[in-house]
Length: 64
Image: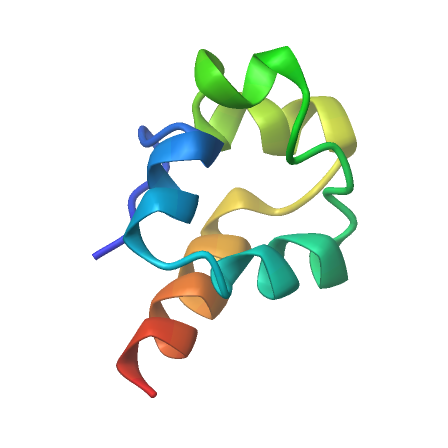
């Protein structure tokens, strides 16, 4: 299960195909240094993305 306090890197370690969901949401910097230290909620704030909606989309993709 994906949560807002996880780093982008840890999310991608669960399933690298989640990168597609992140990219589609507007988060295009998956390889940047902040992906290893910033949590999903912080990254969403920087990019103007709804963190709750993104978490829902990521978890829906994991359920498939």
